[in-house]
Amino acid sequence: MKKSLLLLGVIAALAIGAPAYSQYIYMDVNADGICNNSDVLTSSITGVDIYWNTNHNQSGTVATCSDGFSALDFSSFDIIVHSSGSGSVTYNSFTPSSQITSAGLSVVNPLTVAGNDAGVGYAISGITYMSPGLIKLGTLNVTVTGSPQLNFLGTSPDPSIPSFGTGFGSHCSGTDNPNTITLGIDFADNCGTAAGTPTEATTWGKIKQLYK
Image (cartoon, rainbow, N blue to C red; front, top):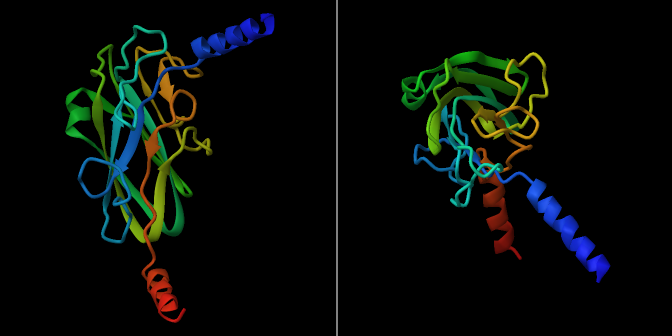
């Protein structure tokens, strides 16, 4: 009985100590405002829209700050993106959305490229905060060759990129970075571009089925 009570106490302590954030950052390449398997990079893609939902997770359920009362509002952001797969992505520029510029955010960490990675950051000057919710950060303008993929990195692997990683400033306190909710530390929900299905592989698969 004592062992059972001790185990329950440990579980309760872990539950209380665990962060309750659950934000969602994602990419959209076909302008439908969501991220799914249709968001594939091809040579025709010249821009990748980036969104952040500060108070909902990927499933749409509401997220709250771990302290139980602070708002998951928004005053700044940094993002780090990484390209991989067959092909390449050239990072040309970043255009902030009208939602970002009208709120008074301006660039503090200009778009910086290091190999397959790129980072950029914006912040509001002063003490103004955007309300919690869905925010379109802007558009990463790119040139695509082949069939690469893009995804977010929680922290920058290269010190030459000024942006520390992928996170946003908020009244809600972060776990490791003060008042910064960071991917891979405070939340996990994110969605990058999808992998395309090679035409040759699909055609060869159909031929093999015919001769079985």
